[in-house]
Image (cartoon, rainbow, N blue to C red; front, side):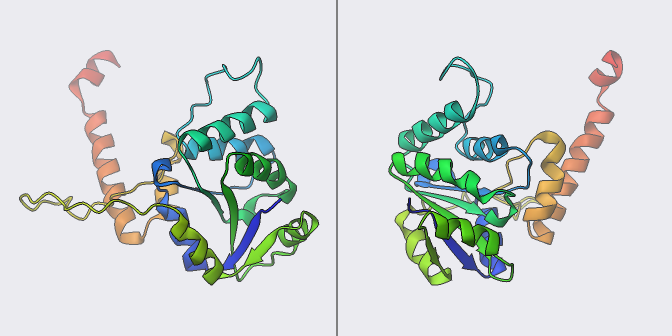
Length: 216
């Protein structure tokens, strides 16, 4: 098993968490979240790939084997070469990364676990040692990241200036009821204020919508 753990400055971890590039770039980045169920880690990885969790066609019933089979299939389909889990220390049971590593490697990709260098990595580092994984620093991570394709560079359309010219290009992917909180946690303050202002404006417009008032 060749799972890799990188201890990096917290701004690097935060930048990865905000990156959220599409799977067609050859790079999948997700942000770990604490959860009591291993299922959440599998589904976060699948969600990052755009996979739906309500289509039960891979096997007769849901479960870890089905989730990991789907993960492997989607990684192969999108030709993912690197799977990055930012804030990996948030996962309560590091051994959950074992089956994930197997699925990622079976698909021809590498699993990189990234943590801030100002945390105590003893728990996750102990698991890594037990599976003979690889550890590294920010330079090692930067050497691995170029293996993924960069964003295509396109010239922006030139048009009349408006209030949304500086609106964030990338937004967090989250369920409706978590969207504002995820934006607040991951976006820079100025970008969050723009997103939140538009969010509240749209909600106010919805509340005053004549159609809604007639059907309410």
